[in-house]
Length: 462
Image (cartoon, rainbow, N blue to C red; front, side, top):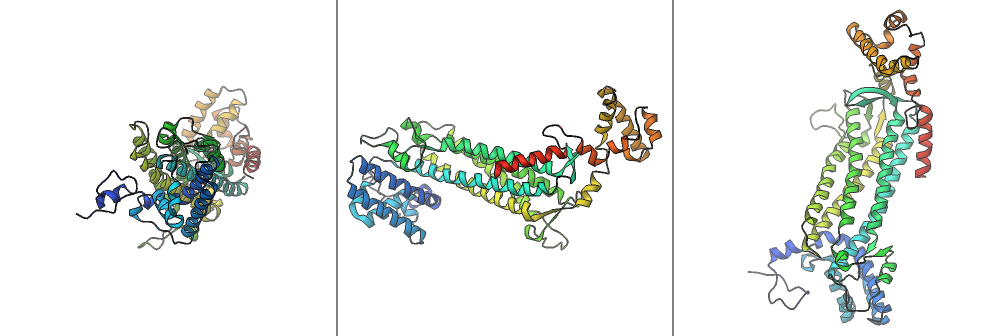
């Protein structure tokens, strides 16, 4: 049976891997994404080897020049290793040896693939976290732009998906900026655990060579190094934390996506989708489909799956490194891609993909009993115990329903029949605008509070 060429990892083996096993074992198809980080880590390692006298400065210079040549070849599209390379680390080492000769074989001194891949992946994720945090800021900015033009636009507020109380549309949008800010903070906290350097941990037990781990970490911009070599090569808490934070980002995007999908339906008709951010039906020419929010809603599940998958991988692993840990990369890579793509498209959707229908929103807040609480508040402000007022207003609503009326349709005489404390100012108190404006407690939907919240949020992201 045909077998693949011998691997470089050991002369202990007399035979080569079965081709199916080689392909199953290889990670080059996805860890090629780490090549720039692998090269950067290797440059730092070469410099550290020279600093500590493990190799000469001349040898280190050759290694660095060779590594940078590989970087340029990759960027030019001329370095494309296949399955026979197994992983990006072997691919780089093999190409480096081709370029600089036997000195290339010295690069792996005092280093294992275990601490090497851990370093590469952390370097990658540090960059991605910073990029995602900036996307979160950018998304908040477009939400704030939309909110600033809709402070006094009213929209029904819901609980249990039932009309509850009218609110400022800006207040509704600001709720999402708060969620996104927590996401931004959470990623910053995750970054602290990603920013620990495992390089120098070796396979699991450190090394006999007089390396300087702190120097390597400094060259790579890490804040600190792992204090335990076993932990350094086997820890994936940081990856799980990232996937957890990514899952929460997707939760928040999915909630907004769900609302936009509802708002765009004929039943709500709160928004119109623009042509640049919607698609049509293959057989129903009248339709505009909310594909962006639907896809975001759907992609949320795959990020959840990556989190669960890595938790399951980790739960039974003995110390230290196990091949199972190869499964962390595709989960991370896909979660990063999904989150970044979802943030980008949702930002575009908010910026230019939806148009609120102000006339429909005005109708929506005027055609229900979402001002009933304000009637109870009206009586409570006049000395009626709130619970008593609450019960009375329930009777008022029932009376209106039986008569096919809204609260605003009751005559003053009818109001007074319900309770003598009602006066003509009840009509102003239950107008949607006054209902919203009156809720001026801190964090509420009152216009003054919303304007202050907008100012605070804008200062936070600028």
